[in-house]
Amino acid sequence: SILKIPQLQSGYSILNGFFLYDYVEIHDGNSESADLLGKHCSNIAPAPIISSGPSLHIKFVSDYAHQGAGFSLRYEIFKTGSDCSRNFTSPSGLIESPGFPDKYPHNLECSFIIIVPSSMDVSLTFLTFDLENDPLPGGEGDCKYDWLEVWDGLPGVGPLIGRYCGTRVPPEIQSSTGILSLSFHTDMAVAKDGFSARYNMTHKEVSETFHCSNPFGLESGKITDDQIIASSSFYDGHWLPRQARLNYNDNAWTPSEDSNREYIQVDLHTLKVLTGIATQGAISKETQKTYYVTTFKLEVSTNGEDWMVYRHGKNHKIFHANADATEVVLNRIPQPVLARFVRIRPQTWKNGIALRFELYGCQITDAPCSELQGMLSGLLPDSQISASSMRDIHGSMGAARLVASRSGWFPNPTQPIAGEEWLQVDLGVPKTVRGIITQGARGLEGSTSAENRAFVRKYKLAHSLTGKDWTYITDSKTGLAKIFEGNSNYDTPELRRFDEIVAQYIRVFPERWSPAGIGMRMEVLGCDLPDCMQSAIGCVCTYTHVRCRSEVVGEVNHLAL
Image 1 (cartoon, rainbow, N blue to C red):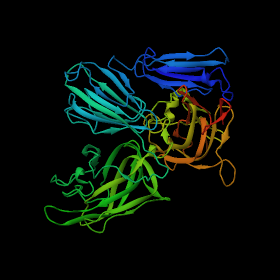
Image 2 (cartoon, rainbow, N blue to C red):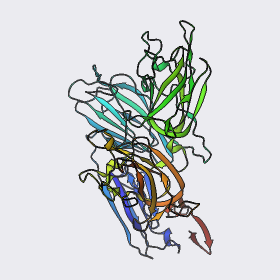
Image 3 (cartoon, rainbow, N blue to C red):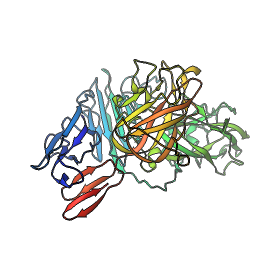
């Protein structure tokens, strides 16, 4: 279940010290002995609270002195399938198929959802894996009978990381959204031993001076062979995509023919910031002849279907690579790009195409106060997304979710006026907000015609604590509403950071857009407001201000805000 408290006002004024006596406790179970999820006072509601099971225990304490408006709450109960479904909130745990290690039952629809606190990361490692195999797969992940799907967010809402079956153990998987979900499906026929996986949460180390230049794992093996594919490989089987790892000691990747139509591709599993590419040629183990790529193009995608050539200015960027077969050449990407899928397409070469490489960058959330606020993961429900108008009156506001949506938000007017249309996100409670990611959109029914590929080139941003009084983010030089640079195509996301603000509502006002019109998907980056801890009673008081400090006046603590 998910508990949301839209209004909270204990019986006191936050400036006169009576907050020590009225509070609300929420426990993850059916009694006070269950784990404490939060102890809240003040007049600002806590963030949505998600239970790990079917019960939440709510305790309200007030004294004899002062009275206030109290609180109201809304709860939602989600039936996620059969009884095998559950949520996980502990720092670590084991997830197993029903009946494990015995064979799993038929006709299961299970959901396992790992919910990660802010400022923490989660990784999922499979220990054993044995599901009914698909003998005639139509493509990667096309398991037709029994399968396990892993989602970067809520099942069916966040992006699908992968669908797995058979006996090959899936790779280690990490979430970028704070929610990692597993969907387990079985049919009425063959049953196998199932799976066992362990998850582990770790505290995120964030620094204002962090460098976004970490190797993603081609050389180390963190990126598995299954994540590397190519347009083709040389016929003798000695030059495969898995051999394209930087400093690999046995040849490299070579296509079936030397052509600029050939490519090698990596699936990073989640959306990441790509900042650099290191390349290397190879010396043939069989002939001792040298081969290397001298120039290449870079292509990126969020879904593996819509590919965009990386541009520097208006032209395709030509990266200069190697001058021999062994030296490593590092190319920094002039403007870092957000992508899940990355392709290298050789343009020129010496003697023939042979490539080993590494990709560099970081997670979006590696930057301070840059947690994804729930558009991509599905944690923010559709009811908290709104717009000035919608072209498809029967459509869902979930279409505006970054990456997770296959379409996007299109306003109703065919010839909109700058500044009149808007897309809005309600974060549920006040947050510290430091950035936004925008993406273009494409029409429904899988259409990829030019008129259905729309994006916003420039926009303004407004924010509010109430949803009624709005303030534009301003340009520090002019004092006027800042015009943000938006997107240059309908797929590649663009991240824009700004000085931190405190807001519950964020509105995007398109100012200029593509010939196909306005089309947008988005995500908000930020973090929870700091807490003021009252050690005397252990009560966490959250305020609509970025910083809190306490002053002692006589015997009463006053919060200077």
